[in-house]
Figure (cartoon, rainbow, N blue to C red):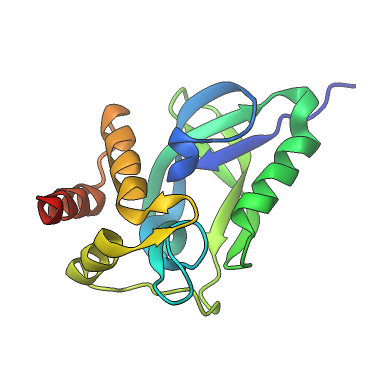
Length: 179
């Protein structure tokens, strides 16, 4: 019997640094969720004393998030899930869920997603964009400056033809702060 495909949805850093073997990538859309800087980062892009911001999927009916779907190498399902859980569930601010994605080629697949827990202390949805920019411009964590995370994500989304007006605005403003 064939093993069921494992798909993972990337909407932020997974797009440019998945960290696991995959055999297929396809543009994909997740309905009823928004990509936003709604999670305080106290590990990767900030510290407990000076939190940064990272992207999360925030449930919003009627909104859709376009990103990248990765089909995992069939022999690497367990290893991939272990890597993802170590990376994404570091502080329990994300909830691992499976959601149906619409792939750009017309297929529908179920994919592992990491959605923000709005009841978690790191949730900070609704911060004004100028406040987000100020936080991102100064925060640094164990994976480097928060601004690098923003720039890499915004640049990769643009290269893929994915429009994200808020990320584009944030990248423009934070780059201007660097000059």
